[in-house]
Length: 261
Image (cartoon, rainbow, N blue to C red; front, side):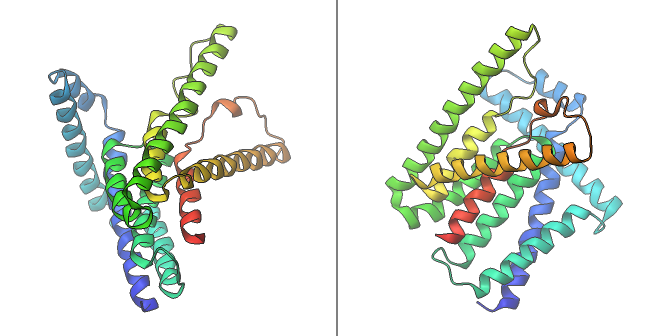
């Protein structure tokens, strides 16, 4: 693979990531009237998918308005294009056991997860399904069908146990303090099926290493952020209740393990 081709493919993937992120973020932050239309839909699976379609239509509409208003003057667009172009250039020159295209496509999906989760604290169902299809396609070739499916189930199970343990703990803490439970838990259920998706890429026990490394990265970031606030002589009051999205740290850990495998 020529370095220039890697750079161009990386830039194109960055452009696609930014456009999809615009749609996902707009759909996730839809105003009340869009959600009211969802509530008015029929109950059951039919109403659920009607709600998703309404959100997506709103997301595409808002993305079109954003591009007409700002065009190429979007900081996130240039950030994703630059980072993925640089990554594509590097991957084209660096032999890896995964190969160029599986790593570049995985990096593009991970960038999409990081952007959407950082801006909305959500992992949309459609995004997870896209990642699952990609993860299965590259994971089966790497780990075999059984190893890949074991990674999916193992990743979801481990994070699911952590999710329920966190729910029990936060509810107990809120009841002990006489406060209502937190609206935004430290771990969302999106992190559960994201962990299953990452298990498709890494198999078992690779996904366990990714979850551990992701937790360490997140803990280190929180520690550095707390130290920075202390050095700037700012109060840490409420710092622990402002939850960071875990998705970006999980995908960073997963990609690191893929590159270094």
